[in-house]
Length: 616
Image (cartoon, rainbow, N blue to C red; front, side):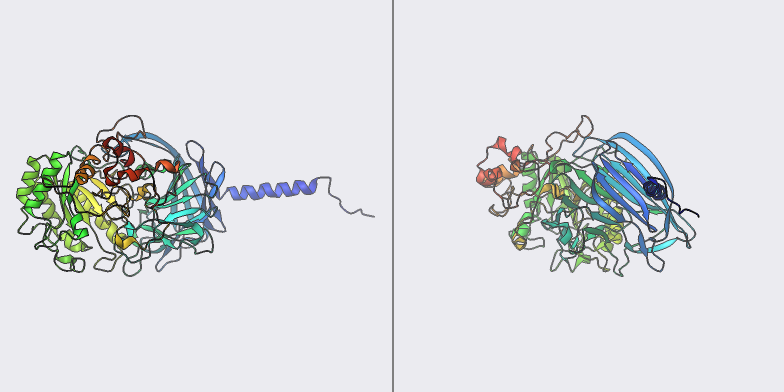
């Protein structure tokens, strides 16, 4: 009689273990990892059910759970399904480069790179790669799509990139789906990530255990649409890329080969470690300018605040601010107080009526009759002050581009090497998003053209800073945030009580200018007043605030020096002393900086109360 087979002791456990090993080996064929140089940050890329995912850990703790990667194209299947891992390549970079100006003199670029090559297993057999670069302070990744027979010209409907948070992190955000002309100058609100709707980047988060701060943004935005993020509205903790569209809804047009901007995930243990950040700079190409000696940051005053409080007008008339006499007074004031420049808004024809609707009426070469452009340029030079030219476009991009060469040539001939430009609009004349590929291309043309004529740029209502100042150091400021000149004005009193103006939240979006007399720190508690009257009977506190605090307190040194990541002289992270290195200081909270009100702080105290990292 045949006895039934009985497995030997422990064979069941051995079989389970063997099956697990086989399964793990199979999974390993579609999974790969890379860590930062210090080993704290780790990214895993893997194929699951034919889809490509990535995840992020820090100190062995999950920060981002497996998050989808891919594209949806118009008129073609999505590049998302039926994928397999073809190859991986790795390299390490450790080098230091020097900025001609900025918050950090010498920047160390130390990262480990993993390139994951992916292909479809079936027709149309398209290929692409995702490149991950891991730094000690964060992660950058981008798509690279080679030229190939079955993917030439394309139109992207959606980029499928996801950021799936491991816990319901506290999130600071400003909305991306409200049709406001000053959308980027709204104050930040705070909520759990699970209730976020549609928001702009950078988005700042704090994990539930308070151990890690996360900033999601992008770097090296060239010929692509800006990335916003779309939340799940209570369904989960996943944020999805939401690209700014053309008028017809397409997000990006192009042809292979192409690369996307870097998607950046900055990581820090403390809020104060979020700034200064060099992650985005390191993900941009080196400078293309051979000579940068003419590029120097500066403090400036000017004729613009009076328009906001009704004491002056941009257009001609009895209250016209941009007159020759008024500008000379400001130049004299700047020269007497060691301030480098004077900005003049409303000097050029086109400000009559609704200048936003009449965007194509602006001239960028013809001044109003009461403004002597040539004479003032010569007078400013004589006084050792830079006259800063204002170019407001109101989104009339074609009108501006038609005049750029002639305007920039005129400014160059007069020795005017600084422009503040503006784009007060939500949509272009053609109906394209202010932040879409159409405008990204425009901004890059302006930067390149300005560099050609030796002109520095201070761009308002811009595409948020994505580190382009490394490649074009003449891009001095990308003011995609609320400066002191616009925070807490009457039109912002609708903001929720929890809204923040924390400089660390704004920092990756660009610098803020706008340091105004009577508005040193908390504008909602400070008295609105007219701009200082240079050379005239200025109130004492105007002179102290506009000159005393600015002088020596608000400008990073132009030369710098020291080891990598050493802050330049006079630069500092503007975190309130009571915060203990954490975010969450309420915009209306009272603190030591109340002493700035009414001139109660001694002159020596002011640099401590208003630090150089926030206002330049």
